[in-house]
Amino acid sequence: MKKTSFIFILIFLSPLMELVRYPILYSTDEPFFYAVIQILIAFIILITIILYLYRKIIIDTVIDVFRNNHFNSKLVVIGIEFFLLDISFVLVTTKPNTDFHTNLSNLIGYTDPRLQLLCIIASLTLSPIIVELFFRGLIQSYLKEIFSEKYAILFSSVIFGIAHSLFSIISLMYYILAGILLSKSREVSNGIIAPIIFHCSWDILLMFMLWIY
Image (cartoon, rainbow, N blue to C red):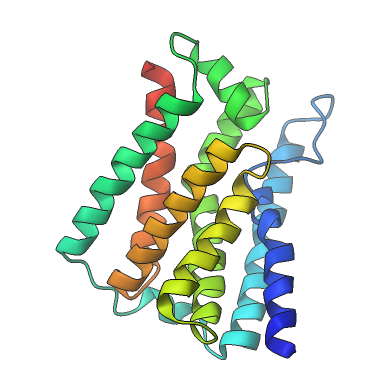
């Protein structure tokens, strides 16, 4: 019962990881630094929650997922698959010949260029750390203690997909596939550094594609 309860707690918390790049409590009538402060506060709160849960249910420290990371040819293959998936995602979900700010507005939900820039910066810095520590470092590790590695990858990727896109079936499927590749990189590398790098590269390539598409 305790294990099931923890799974539901993790599922409930999963959408909150996006608060580290989306200042949803900010109004454009307020000073812009309020949005920056909200992002930083969200990061501190979320990292505190992750550290607590990691210690509570994994019985380990977060620093362990940064130790003894292995980088090999399998990660190169995963990287290529991730690259192709990202390009396909943009081609399928974005209208061509649309200006960059409009594409960003459709993707992020903000029309204010300052908020768009803040979201981009957070997506390339704080967000990959928080998201990967939570989904690959916490959820995937915990599920592996209950299920097999294969099912841990599948279940954590489905939760990842739902947390990122619940209302678009196409985006949902892409994020689940992205989650599977990120989870595989976690297992292949025996750590969290590779998933963080891949996650960051997803956002970088996504922004570049939106700019040239």
